[in-house]
Amino acid sequence: MRELARVPDVTVYGKVAAILGMLVEIAGLEDSLSIGSRVDLVDRAGNRVPSEVVGFRDGRALAMSFGSLDGVGLGSKAVLVHDEPAIRPTNAWLGRVVNALGEPIDGKGPLPLGHKACRIRANPPPAHLRARVGGKIDLGVRSINTFTTVCQGQRLGIFAASGIGKSVTMSMMAKYTNLDVNVIGLIGERGREVQEFLEDELGPEGLARSVVVVATSDESPLLRRQAAQMTLTLAEFFRDQGRHVLCMMDSVTRFAMALREIGLSAGEPPASKGYTPSVFAGLPRLLERAGPGLVGSGSITGLFTVLVEGDDHDEPIADACRGILDGHIVLERAIAERGRYPAINVLRSLSRTMPNCNNEQQNDMIRVARQNMSVYDDMAELIRLGAYRRGTDPTVDRAIELRPALEKFLSQRKSERSDLEAGYQELAAIVAMPYDGADGAAPTETPTPEAPTPEAPTPEAKA
Image (tube, rainbow, N blue to C red):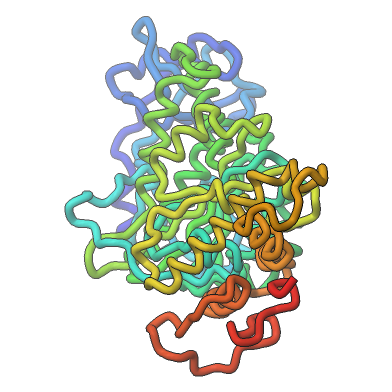
């Protein structure tokens, strides 16, 4: 009965009046359509091509299709679709891979449908009703756990150019995090890399508690945009069940590029680097959906990769995302080229929940480690040229001594998991500072050789 109630009483038709590139002008439905309305275009063979209204001009609706326009011509029928874009997920979607329309693409059969419809273009929770960010999250990556600590409900950007390892870093966090559910959006990905990510990077263990949404680079901009919205919709579904969700999206930049294509096709004037004003309005509408839920519900911890063009971290999308998100992790090509992965520049990375989420000892050791890394970076050219003489400045001497141990600390294999508390223990040993554990009490476990106690510093710390 519920399905029958959604069947419309009448069917409203229009017709295709013009086609220019990706844009279709529809006549006869102007009074029935609004921005975001869905229309099915009927091609010469009788097949339906779903499309969406993106604007109006000269009394006609402007629509873009989700698929190919082959076979659609002047006079083709345009059928108004009454249903609002929505999906009906269930917990059985865990371990599955879907497209931007919520259809399975993993060859494992149809997806079961739930009773509740979840709007794809939902609004974020009201700000005054939201809970505050929760406690720390163990992401399994040592450098992120210690220097850019993430809390439940925080939104963090991973800023990197192509080929520096952001997908591998993201897959490590998906496998090793201690949250309940992963929702991963692969937006504008290369088609051949999707299966590699699922099998090699995420693996069966990570996929079992994840839902993956895929829209490859060859798909229409509407599908790439909707895949990002679908990712947040699925995360909201699990959040409303009281679960703590890790929502990962690769990448926000390709979502912004899809918005740019849609805006330019609709005749919107270009602004900064060709991005239209609607792009900068669409980014916060998407990213604000992540974060803490209503008081008493779950949370969505968002990790969003931002593809910086030409290693320019001040380009428009990166700059806009930094102002919206609660921190940023910067991956640099120069660090990757010298063989240290993850290639995180700790000094340029920031978590806005720090230092409030740490105790005093943790903040002290992180501050000392950062100071030594900063001193070494300032003197790096002189040190490499041999122009600095040991003994000239004790601060520089200390930074040189700690450099090998800190570099080893920041390096981590993708098959290696690092515990949150073990990272603090290891960092305390490197900087030779006392540390009594997260709660101020002595640790109950004996430190491993990889995380020695301050009384037994590593050989690198003695150097």
